[in-house]
Amino acid sequence: MQTIISRNSLVVMGQLYALTKPRVLQLIVFCALVGMVMAVPRVPTFTEIQHALLACAGIWLVAGAAAAINCLVEKEIDAKMKRTSWRPTAQGQIDGLLTLLFSSVLLATGSALLYFWINPLTMWLTLGTFLGYAVVYTLILKPLTPQNIVIGGSSGAMPPVLGWAAMTDQVGPESLLLFLIIFLWTPPHFWALALYRVEEYRKSGLPMLPVTHGINFTCLQILLYTLILLAACLMPFVYGMSSWLYLIFALVLSSVFVGHAFKLWRQYSDEQARQTFKFSLVHLSLLFAAMLIDHYLF
Image 1 (tube, helix red, strand yellow):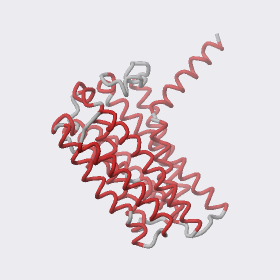
Image 2 (spheres, rainbow, N blue to C red):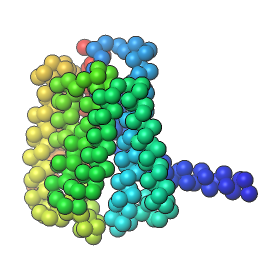
Image 3 (cartoon, one colour):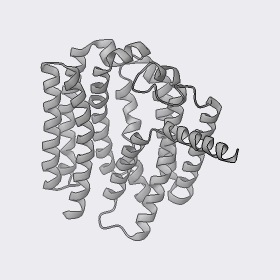
């Protein structure tokens, strides 16, 4: 009997963990870590490393809480889409009250950690990001406007700002440049996904851009955003945050992203949309990785 209860507990824990969207959390924490590293102009001390790890934990907890709320609110929509139908809330495997309790515990724990062990500014910024994603984006913007991902993208672009605030107790202009890069990266990233899953979004009733304005218009918007993104990715070099090594990576990665978007605009195919979406992940990851390498080498 005890073994059965133990196994059931592990299953439930696994389901709750899945609600935090672990892959998305990895990118969130990585972007926050970039902000932390860039905020320290030298090799960090052991105390600063401990401080950064605690901040990462707090941000992870609050972001996980927001993801769980998102899964709870959108469980009926998720059930209609192949990409999200596996989620425990969509399949009815997790009770809504348990999900809400789980999210509340994560939110309270993460907020307390950030407030008492990091600084109040980081806690309030992280809490604002939670409200922006879980309430403003999920409940208001996403079901009402095709510009949902543009406006709501501000929440997803906050991690570097949170990381910078965690290490400096302020929001510096450098962190806002990092915010701008992610803010401009988000629409072409998600619209590429929405293009080759347009029928799923149509079935779900969400007013994503390919559903409301068609494929050609969406492809044009993706191309325009990648061009603006290319310019934004050069700003850390222009501002003096990074040197020529980062500049080379930024130019190459952003040019390839523009190339994918151009091919998508000239001749649409689901496969090209899929390739554009996949490269968008490579673009952001390698761009920030290059920024970190550049930060320590030069």
